Length: 161
Image 1 (tube, one colour):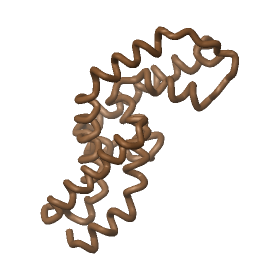
Image 2 (cartoon, helix red, strand yellow):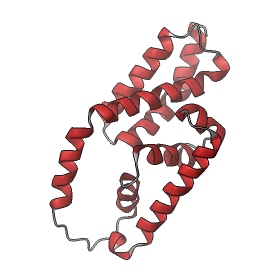
Image 3 (cartoon, helix red, strand yellow):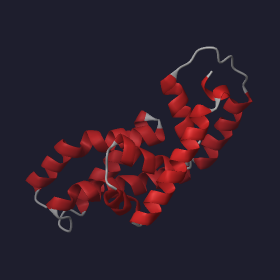
Image 4 (tube, one colour):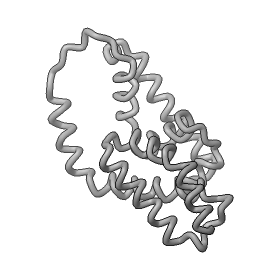
């Protein structure tokens, strides 16, 4: 990959990678750090990256860095989640976006990533497999189970009212 091809890849895919990571992490600064790290790694390894595969390479690196980031920060966020769940809230207003985000947050990290890659970013099962390191069958099964969990959460009246 040449410098020009690298710059084209940055211009073409930076927003998509950032949206994907931000939607999974939910924190702008962390998402920016992960995306920056992915582009840095691609720059360092640009001689080994084929231009035709730069999108796949970039999403794969960003995905793995996001997983590493999540693992590092797991203890802190787990403690904060317990505090949030202990609060009692009045749920009289119906907010579709909030319900959907709550449903997504109930999924495991891999399930959430698969849903975001397939339904939000529009990748094929094969591309998702390349990004996550799963085979196509695993992607389909995990995605199916994630969608069942989402449906179960969303159709439950106490979650949406």
